[in-house]
Length: 197
Image (cartoon, rainbow, N blue to C red; front, side, top):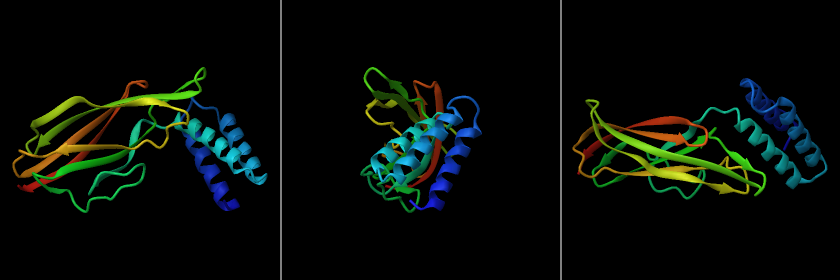
């Protein structure tokens, strides 16, 4: 990484960490970046990456719970960042609607005894027609939780909605993610149109 990019990354992460009061200490973040830089200068990329992952976890504590990279997809995603966006939001009743998103800022609990990170999310959805009527929905239709040996900052979610039986018209789906450990929720509103069978 060039010196200019290194400084830019460090400044960006520091600004994010200092933007919200309280959780991660700026000194801890600064120390993590110093460790990463020292390891990079010693040509130890594994140690540098480990320190940067520590910095990521510190910054994560300051992020509000939300989502990034919300996309309608043309096909199911292959993994994190591996997706083909759909060119429009118009569907036939026979087509599934695939929604991709990357949640951030959810509560991650470190379990020191096991050396693992725990997270627990669930999701709800409401399907709403052009007149504001709820025409479908389900609570707790997706549960996404588990343990990881690494900090789970690259965690993609995808939802496949069946549109069969919906008459032509304008709709929106409200997908609500709930962070069960952090006690927060975030709703993503996605508009779409049914154009025919």
